[in-house]
Image (cartoon, rainbow, N blue to C red):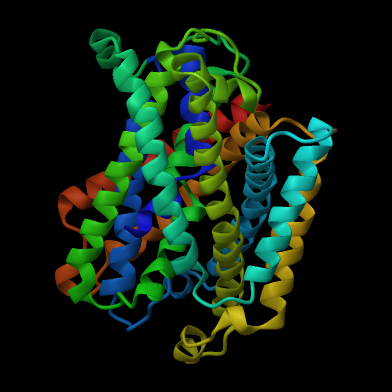
Length: 411
């Protein structure tokens, strides 16, 4: 069930905005992105579990292809981690502020709430096995979201014809507040993921799943996690598409809360804020941890001495003072400034950052493709079969398309 920790604010916002602004028209991008994520993460896990060098780090695999690659990927992950933190921390502060009754000034109240949550997280930095702690909260968030949005979707019902038409690769003209192609890129970059998927490497390490005999249970874990995320996102999407505000521009997180409130009353908004809080409070500590580890792991594998691969693999990066400083200062404290009243809205930050995330995807996908399709890197029996190779090629094509659309839409 580790994949539940991937249920992020980007999922909730992208699905809500897409459904409200475009109805069912862009639903195909959600399904495609989750399929791409499954293929991509499954390939990452296969290398970690079944490579022929006894390495448990995907960064060590990248170093086998080209020595500078791990540092490049790690740096990209860290920069994107800062971007993720800007909107996730702001979302957590907004949700917490609404849950405690919106005391005082609303704009500064969000900032003070976000600052308090960052302070709690800084304390938790000294706790070992952070993933295990926040995975429990992620499961609670998944249950809340399934119950809340699932109930609303059942109460409202949905149009099966429009639902099916939404799977036919339509890209409608912009009708809401955000370009349709940018939303598609955000769905593929945010839900399909890029550098964040590499953090699955550390989920496996934390669970002790490091050999080929763990491959079956890892695939079950990944499949269940993807199924839960799909159900939650479809429920959110249907709720947004069928609500009375559908067809209007959703550029404020309070409008997202109204999706539930307009259907089942005040309790709907409470459920929304609870879900958003659990998702964001799970995500920004886990992301800051994972992206920092990707940076340090990548740099260590790029600059390690010849023959020192096993020494790097055994390093406990999170015990180093530099790890806590990088995580705390650059991925928690500095991103907090984006919760100030003068900064862009939570929804705007979410869409923009997740669209930018698509830019890193192709490089990583190519690296994973090379590692898993060659006997030079994999145990012979686990080299990709033809259909796995085709699937990775398709994922790579989707990543390139999303990158192009992200650049064109943003510029």
